Length: 68
Image (cartoon, rainbow, N blue to C red):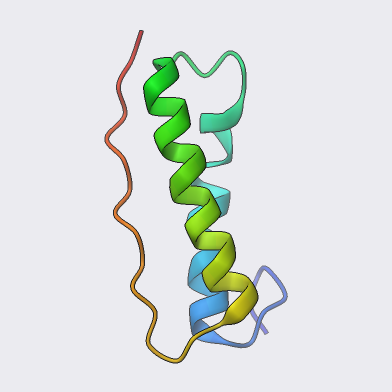
């Protein structure tokens, strides 16, 4: 079992990527509004992978951090 309680590798990877980007959704992250929105979309895609656990998922590309 992994740190996040998942035993399936794709589910685990998606959870780890979500955890790595939690800070991007905080109101004081310092990121531009468009960047926050891009991370929101990215994170939604990761949640779909985590929920459906496809055998060969295409992980989304992490947005570039754009600061205010």
